Length: 323
Ligand code: UFG
Image (cartoon, rainbow, N blue to C red):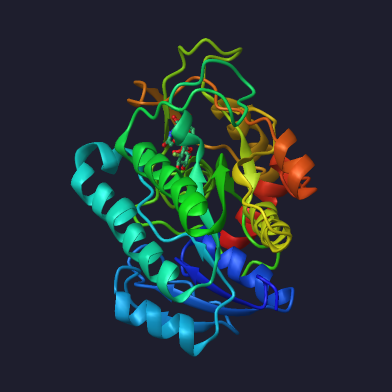
């Protein structure tokens, strides 16, 4: 029996979760998706769908036993930084309280292997770039704080209860499955790349660039965009490594290349062959100037190298999924 035999994917109807579910099915795993369909509506063909809440202890216990789940990959959660600032209660409940309920059931019923979706937001405003995993952890919003709280819980559960875990800290997840069947679909959409594409296609109002007076070469924020299929592959590699025994701790998942908002607009205009209508607005609160991952640990521990994370490929795949 291996961790990849039967995987419970919480949040498997969401953006990263659905891409992981698809990758795991393609690689031969049985996949059981547990989702309340509040943050995404993608049903991946071939996955068993359980509609419900991660904090429903009876449902989760029954699901783990009925399907003989061998690992849990936990994507479900609230993901919008701005919303977390306005409504921290919802974020601490959704991301911390409910995850602790899930962990309780896992402790009781097994399996002993869990991957957790963490985020670059645990670093807050980084002291240096590229960011390494042992750099200062100082979230500047409740979203990042809730993710870090669960990382701490996992460390404790690993030591005390023998849970084998990894927390994968995503930088800017983007792109879509190259066959066009899965897409980034948040409601409301706040992420740059879908907004850029939709602005170019005239489906949304012109993009507002949140500030062009940052200390970067063109004045706009630099981020590390990583293809969602590369993220999915890293999760499969992490499950394999956890089969080997020890917990992996926290690992950055980024392409380790920085792209500014203006650079993205430029590449999108080239790829789409039409202008991305935009204006310059004020800075958005809580946006660090540069977020860039060191992915050396992921390379060393997981043997992971991003393969689809060039901006052209990310945009090609995202455009295909939206047209
Ligand atoms: N941006 C704009 N205009 C928009 C939307 C975004 O200029 O309409 C800019 C942002 O200011 C930022 C960049 O585009 O500089 C990327 O913004 P996103 O909202 O797409 O992504 P974030 O970098 O804010 O957030 C991502 C993840 C979060 C995670 C965070 C880590 O979506 O879950 O990285 O800090 F917390």
